[in-house]
Length: 452
View (cartoon, rainbow, N blue to C red):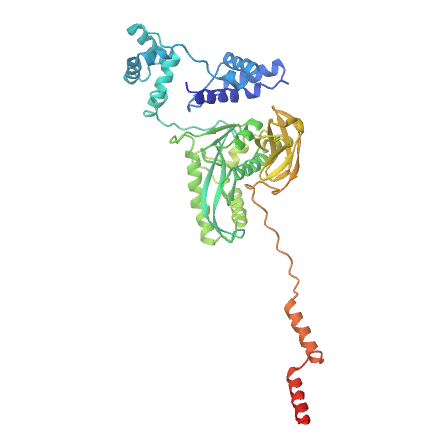
């Protein structure tokens, strides 16, 4: 296995056990977390979904404590040379899988041993077949039938997406920009949880909408999104991890779970956007106000053709939903970056420089901050608080991804400065304060005649 691949697996394993490595957990608390981890599926670096036993998770935690990230790298196997020494074994393993796609790696390993008397581990067979694209998941995809899926309760699963809207005047850049509708739909009730048009399609817009939706409707169990940049980023991953939301990204070219969202997008285009474009859109704020009113009065009150209920009626039938404390919500939407402390005990962030504890010189620390306020930076080292970063050189007060508020237009005084100057000039000329050069020339001519 290549070193880069070993490192990826080590990082993946730490991501699995990270929440159970907290030193302040009691034995009972750690056991509960490990059981929860074992019940979940995890996306492996090779793209597959895997579940790990409690024994494996406990073994990785012990390895991490003993040797850090290096100890989580997979051990080299003594049987990997078998396939290299006998390439015909690999060809035969591929043929056996193609002959019967449901044939397991263990069965193929057993066939190879009884046929050639060469023992190849099940894990090695599985890995070689996966590299050749012959794992059972890939072969079964060709015969896959997409069934209908629906969450059992409201807030069990939210689906989020971006709908590209019309061009809208944008005074900040003195031109029109394409509005992007960030949308969240509840899978069970088909309720439009929240939606808002933004001028930019980025992670900040996604987080703004998610925070509004949580404040209004509570916490979802799952957030289902595509692999676009607003949804596949470390900031949203951290937000969901802090809040206990399982972030799931749809697999490329796999339409499962996207059908409801696509139908919602089509409905919004036909029932709202066409009407809005017909009437004319003066600004992004006006478009958002109209959309909020339409969602509340029309979209969430119409009787859905499939559920035979209005989305708001079906959503509220499940009773009150799980909320979150304000402090935890604030922490969840902080952004996090890693920086190395310079020899002068400072760290850079967005063109600014911040002073930190001199004891951290040369170490890599985590900075947590609100992108809308770069004056407050919390420092963490090894997951523990390590003080506050004090602004030393400030060039930006907000992150560049945060839309800047438009400066309000000043009140008009009605004073015409040039008119005042002209009036003063005319008044001064009328009182003789100004020299009349034409009269001066006439007086000079008369004086010369007298001298002659």
